[in-house]
Image (cartoon, rainbow, N blue to C red; front, side):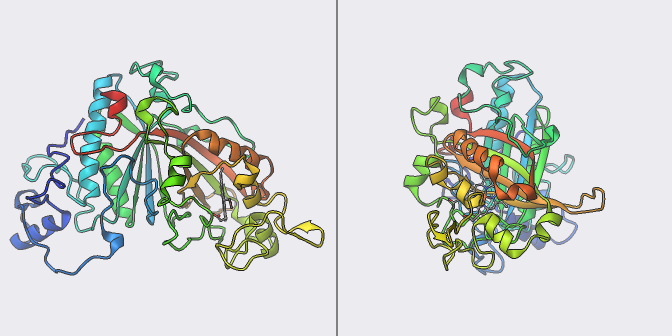
Length: 430
Ligand code: HEM
């Protein structure tokens, strides 16, 4: 495993400022082209242009009682990675998480990964593709899959007795055809940023650090956030053209986050308190069928107007949904409309925080169509919240003719690293 050599806390520790990627570039420019970047990095180089960057370029704090990337306002791009742990040593696993935490603190602060001075005779610690780029509100969120605790490979790390009962493979649902190669995994990292290259760079670095301990199992890139977790964000549209995320949990609403998203003390093992469960579903959209559906039928399937995003029968996007409204003896929002079946009132009050992204891949099958859709991600205090909603949706959602779930994964995301020197998953592994 590649070890980071600088401490997690340098950036926050006041006094001497840590090296930013911007510093590195300024340093290189000062010494001219051809100078080896790794030898020109010096501390304290001033930002050269003085222009203040937009907020979307800034940083999201990494340390805290909860991991970032859950309640954080949704960034524009996703790079999600699932890993299989190949080592059977618990010490290796703990070291990997310690190293990932150190690297995550550096990367989310917009700093170059690795030590300030590196010999030219060795490959650079930082792969370099984010050098000119601002932090872009990068967040890195880590999770543990059920297989880490016990699975076909047995209890490799002696963790079986520490598995939260809630962390189990999801049950099968109708309307799914899951690709095992794109599903599951022992560890996950969700990288979100307002620059796709910054998100990719983080996964690139973290997968290099994992060498010898864990290997990438699958990755998924996403764009065009399909949810908002803050009313200050405009609601983005999914690839079906509908505003998605209108009736989502607001990440700034601490009361609802505590009730629905964060694991509370007593919910399960103490090491998960302050954490959350992540469910990921790759949901392919059958564009040919959807695109040839009338506007009226599309709106009936969702239960909202396409243009405004307002619930059917209402005028504005955030008008409350009235599931009892009738017109001409029929419900205004159809019995099989997506928002009726997904609503808390149809699911014993269950709510989830959706934080998914669109994806599109140039896969050609048969007649040559776009393979794309929604890389659905939800966070919840207990996976049963997702399971209850998905049971109802998979049985009767009007959208089912237009979608197919093709991959699935579940991870337990532990609480955050509270301060420099602590690491993600310490409560489980230390
Ligand atoms: C490709 C698949 C999907 C599409 C295109 C889709 C689209 C939408 C749209 C357009 C809305 C209305 C706007 C909003 O409130 O966000 C919505 C609401 C919602 N969706 Fe989905 N969704 C999909 C899959 C899912 C899945 C798998 C779940 C959970 C199992 C889910 C749960 C919800 C919930 C909880 C709401 C809010 C319902 C309410 O008004 O209370 N969706 N979705």
